[in-house]
Length: 157
Image 1 (cartoon, rainbow, N blue to C red):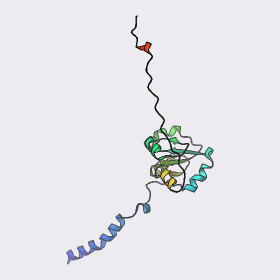
Image 2 (cartoon, rainbow, N blue to C red; image 1 turned 60 degrees about the horizontal axis):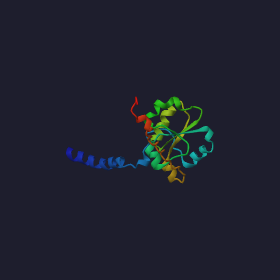
Image 3 (cartoon, rainbow, N blue to C red; image 1 turned 45 degrees about the horizontal axis):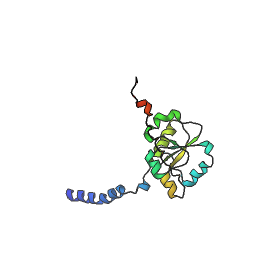
Image 4 (cartoon, rainbow, N blue to C red; image 1 turned 90 degrees about the horizontal axis):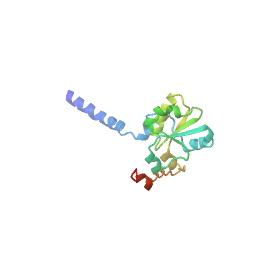
């Protein structure tokens, strides 16, 4: 009898357990508190660039592959805390990443350090909502120069 009751309880509980595990990602709480800005919210902030600082926390290869915004401060997420001394506190900050997850975490860090964070933006979400990204090219490395012929001449002649 006890075995039958136990099996029945397990079978009744299983659908609820599977339903909780298969919850779509959109319904889960993000792992950060920073507000993810919609395209209209971000566009409104861009109308006053003198009051705004964009901090892009992506890797350089992501910037060149996907694109971004024309003016930004590039500090990768892992270097953000050690770079706080170079970030001005007199502007509103928008943090930027591909889908706003890293940007949200960066926004939380900056908020905890006393910065005025307006929100986070994901460039791919922004573009999907009709926003225009700037394609960013990596600078070409300088060509190696060859020393003048006189530099290779033996000394003492």
